[in-house]
Length: 116
Image 1: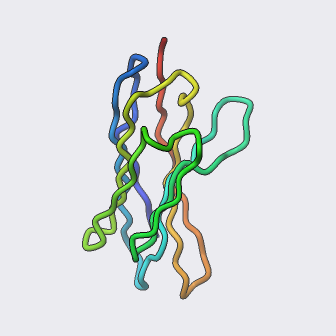
Image 2 (image 1 turned 90 degrees about the horizontal axis):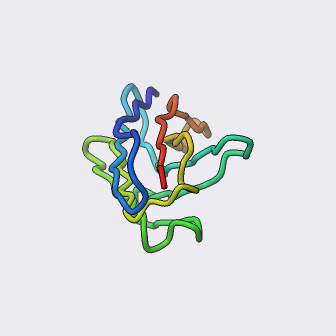
């Protein structure tokens, strides 16, 4: 399974970005897809996940500002990020869970930088 992220960049605090992640190459259904991030000096942390059934999970730090959505037909997951803060600066990684294979796949990451 290949995951390709796009949409990162540099934005001023208070601005918005939309990340996309397209999955390809899977012979089996993808269940959960989501976004994680790693800020400099920190460990990777959950941002948001969304199952194929529509169940969402958000980190407390992004609730009310970020929205995860998904196009199941395209195996694409999106992350709309509003009211961005400097502390949102990180490399954002997309992942996908394929339950039949019991395997999680990761994208290579896209940089998000928020300046104050």
